[in-house]
Each structure stands twice: as structure tokens, then as C-alpha cells.
Image (cartoon, rainbow, N blue to C red; front, side):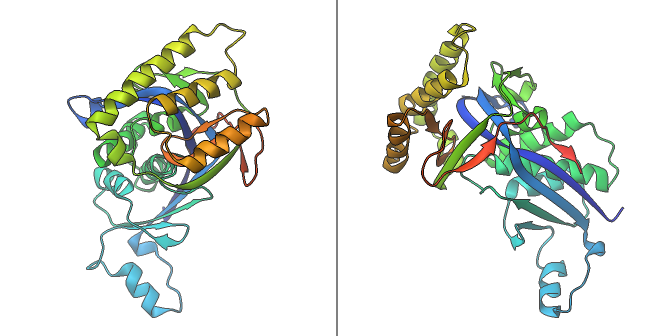
Length: 296
């Protein structure tokens, strides 16, 4: 086999609670989030299967093993993506080229790092005929995220797909599916947030966890009539404010404008970004989908 392809959906986190264990394999998060119709498409090739172009200079940059072990491209631009590199190191000693394509940005709360790690794991498994189960591969991607400080629960949502609430730590791979799907949402991002700095900050951790527990308890207390998307967004917004994660004045302004026009909105975790159930100026559309990560 010359190459392998895989897809993993983007995941939007609304609420999260940090759960540190004795090891990365016992670390994760509780919370609320959903996958959407866009995500990452990953193509992996072995070094020996790279087609040469007429540009010798570019070929030398890509194939000179003295300079780099694995090459990762994001929308055709070479980047450093330690989480995906960790997945590669855990699964093979072969040198590979990983080409990741996505319409959504890294570091803005769409779980693109986790999606890249999971799709990379699936594609490597196919390319090298490793015969590992999807759950084993997802756990490898999850551990890589924890080790690199890029996330705690995105991979688990992307493994299952859909709208999910986690009342147990994500490393256990247990989710409660919420019957909300094929619903259009609108988003806008301004800039990235360093996830590692947030989830490794002890003072912030206490605020986040206390606010997250309060939010999940509110969700548990909702009856069938009130268990709807509007109320879930409202509880998520309360979490973002109570935890002090929502502090960007522009994002706060966008949310207020949406609410003034009868819509509902909240901050996307973790990014200076917002999503809403109604269109707002400068926003783009996504659809909540059940589709999980898969081979292509």
C-alpha cells in the first residue's frame, strides 16, 4: 500500500472539567461538546512513495532524512504538530509524510489537533497493516493529546461522533449521546488560545472544575421539556463566564449582540471564538453531525 487516508470531525467543546490521573492514560475530562460536518482529511505516505516534482530544491527539503524524521503538512504548509508526531512515534518507526487538510483553524477550539491525531492513527494503522482496533488507536491519540497538553477529551467525542455529554472521565470512553443532530450553527473565531497554559494552570483548574461541576449538575436537573439546545447553550455560557475563561471583550460583545437579537451564543472552548444558533455578522455555518472518525 502506497498511501492511506482518514477523516476525523471537528469537535466543539462547550463545558469541560479537568480530571488528572496518575498517568496520561488515566487522565481526561468531563463535559459537553459536539462534532460537526467539517474536520480534517489526512493522507499519509511512506517516504519512499513521494512523487518527485520538477523542483529539485523542494524535493530536497521534503526528502532529506538528515533534516527531519517525519514531515507534517497542514493545508500544504509544513508545520510542527507534536501531538500527531507522538502518534506516529507510538505506532511506527518508519518515516512518513502526513498531509492534513482542514477548513477550520488549529488552536481555536475546534479540536483540530485531536482530529489530526486520531485520523493519523487510523491512516497509519491501514498503511502499515497494524491491525489495531479503532478504540486502541483512539486511546493512543487521546494519550498523545494529554502528553502534549493539547486537549483532554476531543478525541473521545471524535471517536464516537455526535452531541455528547461525559459524566465520567474521557479516558474511560463512556459518553451519553444527546439527540441533537443535523442542526445548523454559526461560528466566528478571532484568535487562538494556548490550551496547555490553561489546563496546566492550578489556579484556573479549580475555577474551571467548580464551574464545570455546577454546569453539569444544571444539565442533569433539566427535565425533558427544558432539555433543548437553547438551554444547553445558556448553561455553557454561564460556565464560560463563571470559570473566567470568557474574558475577551470582543467575544463578550458578539455574544451580547446575538442575545439582543433573540439568539443564543457562547464561547468555544478553548479559543477566542463563539458559536450561536442563529446567523450573526461575519459568521460561517456548520452542522452538528453524528459522523465519527473513519478511514477513507
